[in-house]
Structures are given as structure tokens and as C-alpha cells.
Image (tube, rainbow, N blue to C red):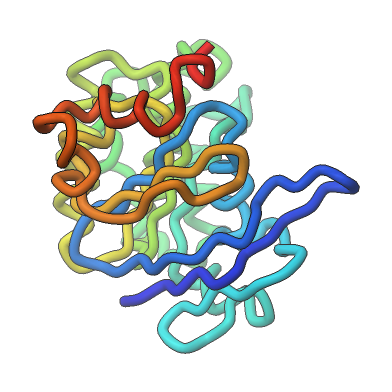
Length: 241
């Protein structure tokens, strides 16, 4: 699969959130989108998830412009937004079953997938609790599970490791790397460790502009493999304040 991002511009009034982004994303490995908070990462993720339209430009998925034909993306998409919204009065299985119905997943298949995801993310012991009793990290794991329902061919996760403990982060990274073998997987984050152990390709944006596109080895070419040093070289320490 191939996703071509061409001259994507997004304005909110007089504010320029994205400034003519151009790069390509393919299946076969995790694509890391890196940048400080406020860089425009979430705006781009929402455009790719067809939640908002760009002011200018095209996003072509396997030959189809998803800005003009959003259902092309929606039919194959698993999306985790930065802020996960759940229904507090439901249990995790009830919530995931609801999401599965929205995705038109057959009941039998949905139950199998839900049971598997609850086990992967260590939520099975808590499946009878209401989501209002879940911690932030547990709610994040439910959101990730919802994104992965239906065997999506394009997976977009925006700051997925927020609230996860170190073991959960590793489990998520391993799962995304495994799924990326034959899918487009886009991981958007400002956390260096989420990228350096996971991504095979990456892009760095700051203030809506593309600063780098290439492999992690190319990114760290001048810093002896130190990704954090390379990152600071591009964005500056003031961007991390």
C-alpha cells in the first residue's frame, strides 16, 4: 500500500498549521511522525483519518484521493486520536462491541477479536468493570484496542503511549511492528523512545513544516546514532520547553 501526501496545507483563519507537506508512506514498516507539541502532527493525522479537510493539497491512497473520496480511507482505517473518548457507563467488552458494530464486524468475529485484544493489553481481568473506573492508561489501552478492531489495513495512532507503563509501551511497539509488515502504520509522537525502537522510516515536522524525511540511520548520521541529539539539532531545546 502507498499513501502519497502532496502539498498539504491547513489554515485555521490566519494561522498556518501545515505548510505544504510532501512525502510518501508505504506499508512494510512503522512510519514515525516526530515533532514537538504544537508542530502540526495531530492536524495531519486528522486529515489522513478524513476527520478534517486540508485547505490545499491531496492525499492519495493507492491511486484514490481520500480528501475527495474519504470512504476509501474509512473502510480500511484504524485510528487512535490523541484524546481517547470512551463511554464511562460501559464495560470494555461492551464498548468494543459497540465499536465493532459501527465497523460492521460480524458478531462472532467481533467477540473473538475483542477477547484477543483484551488479553494482549492485559484488560481481561478488568472486563467487568465500568470504564469510569479505569485509569488513564487502561482507557488508552481500550482506545488502542478499538482502533485495531476489524483488521485495518491503515493504522494511525496519535501519541499512543501516553499513560502506558514501560511494559505496556513495549507490548504496543511490538504489536505495531508486527502489524506493519503488510499494512501502513503511522505512529505520531513527541517521545523519542517510541520512534527509535520502532520506526523504519520517519518524518520530522515543526511549526507545520517538514524538516526531515528518511530512515532513522539517515536522521542520526551526524550524531553517531544518537536520535535525541539529532532531534534537538533540528528542533532546538526551546521547542521542548
